[in-house]
Each structure stands twice: as structure tokens, then as C-alpha cells.
Amino acid sequence: MTRSQASAALRTDDLQDRFRAVRALTEALAAPLSDADATLQSMEDASPAKWHLAHTTWFWETFLLREHAPGYRLFDERWPFLHNSYYEAEGARIDRVARGLLSRPSLEEVLAYRAHVTGAMAALLGDPAHRPLIELGMAHEQQHQELLLTDIKHALFANPLGPAMWQGAPPQPAEAMGEGWFEHPGGIARIGHQSDGFAFDNEGPSHRVLLEPFALSSRLVTNAEWAAFVADGGYAEPRLWLSDGWAWVRREGISAPLYWREGEHFTHAGWQPRDPAAPVAHISHYEADAFAAWAGARLPSEFEWEAVARGENGEVSAHDPSGGNQLDSPHGWDAAPSPRGSPGLFGDCWQFTRSAYLPYPRFSPAAGAVGEYNGKFMSGQVVLRGASCATPRGHSRPSYRNFFYPHQRWQFTGLRLARDIR
Image (cartoon, rainbow, N blue to C red; front, side, top):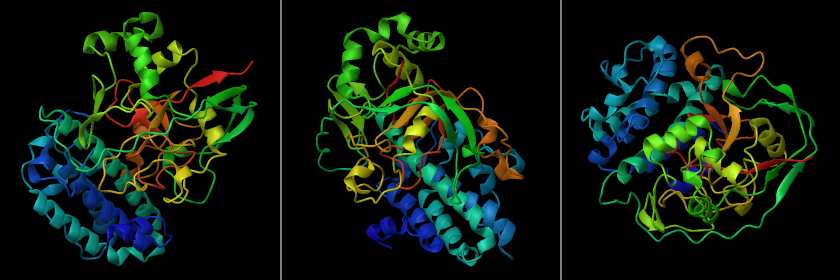
């Protein structure tokens, strides 16, 4: 399957074509990496690219093939201990911080594992009874595609040489976007997943919320605006910061977004000039909240964001320039993903909200090990909405809830301001 064929298959209704396309995309994203590159783990939050390749394969083997394919035998009985992530029901596993010590299996062996499992899955793809779990498996692998990209970016950044994962011309300058606002009159809004299509368990049940009148910015905050915040002493003014955020700034010596240095930022293409008009990225929730206070605005709630997004389309054609900058946008898979500025609510950066990551009313986790997927993480994290330049097209939707701890910023995270209407 060529890359153009795989990109088209990601948007088809044919389950077998979509499965093969998702598997192909993961391998295409890792193709520029050497075995040494793919083994790197630069911090506890990140995992090696090789581990992402194997873990997504372990998911198919564990929850589909082992349980539902008669006569299937594990590719290697020692590997589930290496590639289980956090599923307590699946037993003991290697400590997360030790994933970077796995020089073996080699990248070549992991790719052979992937080929074996992908081939074995053919026997299950045509059975409608397995479709819900297959849909979950594809969405799971798409999440790890983005994590693979963001984790290897951090690992390459840690190298003093600033190596590039992809070579090529730097991205075209972003087009400056005018200031505008989506105004919402408030009232009762229906929140959560509301169709027959796939959604993660944390997107439901659908329920009603009461919104006060508000406005949501039509664009993301830019690098130029963030540079003004830095120049105005934003990182040195405690009145702008949440208490935990101010303690984090002082403890970690934070004075700019991750990957910034004078006039430049680090990308998958190495160090590049920083585009003032492009959306700012790699900021924490603490930083986003402080900037909003400095700007005389605030972060939106996740419900406000979704209420506006119900009027936006997060699953447009990859060739539609109004569809947002996401992974299969025209820059393709051979170019470094980078925020570039685009209309609409989806693409470029995941957008912080002011909402804690909590269960919706009447939420209950699914039965079995897959019930551990989202629910047990509903503590101490904040919700982000939208999609980023590293998010596979079609993965996000208005009800999608991403979530991270407030100090984390190695993902493509940005912000969109909100304000009250009185």
C-alpha cells in the first residue's frame, strides 16, 4: 500500500482498508528512525518509538487475537511483560521508566512482530461481532501515532546536535489571521457523543449543561503574542499564575515554552526560525492560564468549546484547506508536523480548557480490561479539545476529550482564549 493509498483508506468506511491504513501509517512515521533512535526514552512521560510500535501490536494480539482467533499463539510469550502499558488486569509489566532500556527486541524484530499480527488480524476483520473492539484498537493506535511523534521530538531535542527526523524545506510562513470571536448566547447545551459512530467511553454519556453567554476566539494565540507576554515579564509576575503554576515556574526555572530559544524553536526538522504568526505550541496548562489572565481573558470550559465546535466540522477532506492542519494535511508524512495557523477549531494544537478531567453524569467504565482505558485517569488532569498537527485526520471530533496533567507540555498544546459576555 502506497502512502497516498493509505491516506485515502483512512477516510473510507471499509474496516479492512482502514485497519491496514492505520497500521501502515504507524510504520511510515517510524521509517526515518534508526534502531538507536527508536530505542530512546528521554523522560518518564515519553516512550521509545520502538515501544509504541510494539505496544500497539500487543493491543491487537491481547484483546483480539488471543481472545477471538482460534489456535492463535503469541508471537513471543515474553513480550507481553515488555509491552503492556497500564492494564492491571493483564498482569505484571516492565516499569514505565525502564522502557528505554529495551535494546532488545531490535527494531527489525518489532517490525516482524507487527507484520505477523497484522496478517493474523485478517481472519477477524470481516466479523461484525468484533467491529467495536477493532474500532477501539484503531483509535488506540492513532493516539500512539501522535505520541510516537511527540516523544521522539523530545528525544531528539535532548541531543545537543539538534538532529532532524525529516529533512526538507522549512514550512511556509503562516498566514496572519485576524482577530474574531464566536459568540454564544448561552442556555442549555447537549454535550458528549451523540451519534452511532465510534467514540471513547469518556465522551459519554451525552448530557445537558447550562452555559452563560460567552465568546470563543476564532484563532489560536500566536508565537508573536506569546513573545510579548515573555517580554512583559509574564513569567516573573506571580499575580498571573495559579499557585501550583507559580511554584512550578520557580522550581523548574521556566521562562518560555518548551523548545524555544532566541528566535528559533526545535522541530522534527531540527532547529528552525520561529514564525511569529504561527500558533504557539508546547505550553502547559499553567502557562496557558497565566497568559489568558495577562490578556484580560480566560480559558474556555470544555463545554463552551464543544458547544461552539458543534457548528464546526472536524472530519473534512484532507484536501480541504479549511479543514485544519492535521497529520495527513498536504505536507504529508515526509515533512515535519508543525503548527501553521488554520481556520476552524480543529488542527495545529490541542487547546487547553479550564475543565478538570472528570466523569460525565452516569459514566461507568466498560467491563473487562478495556474498562481501564480512560476512567481510572479521571483525577488531577485537565481537558484539551480539538486536534493538533500530529493528530491523524478523522481521529478527533467535537466530543473528543484529550487530557494531560497541568505541568505537561511536550505535546502540541496551545490555547484559544474565551471571555464572558455580560
